[in-house]
Image 1: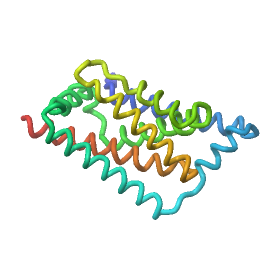
Image 2 (image 1 turned 90 degrees about the horizontal axis):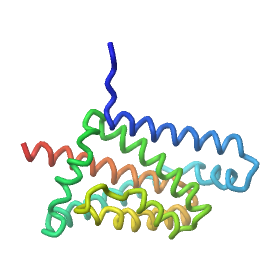
Image 3 (image 1 turned 180 degrees about the vertical axis):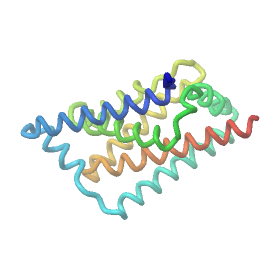
Length: 186
């Protein structure tokens, strides 16, 4: 029996691979200054801090949903996002949100923040979210500002877990909203 993998399965596998490569690099190059700073960023975090940043992610998600749903200029975005993520429908939103938030935070706030600074990694994060369709032009702008915000949060809290909590919450909430949009349109 041949197994068919969707774009969502491939995306989750890709994010897991990025995380594995990153963890291996920190392990094998643990004597370098960069790896030592990464070990500090991935250190323990209190439950209170984690929950407060998860709440921050929910606030950002609610705010962006409100703006999208109550502004004619961005009213097309839910449908555009739904169409863009259609091929990932076989993957549970938790899996995709979990794997993408960890991998992207390791790459952009972990490596990017160290080598490019807050604004440089924010620009790179925005470019990495460049859309295929012109009607989603606001997406990389939003990603740039989120990247800068997550960069500052990582810098001031000295941990990646705060950015991971916010990123996961935003991604998971957004994907659940897309599922709601899909059901509402039927």
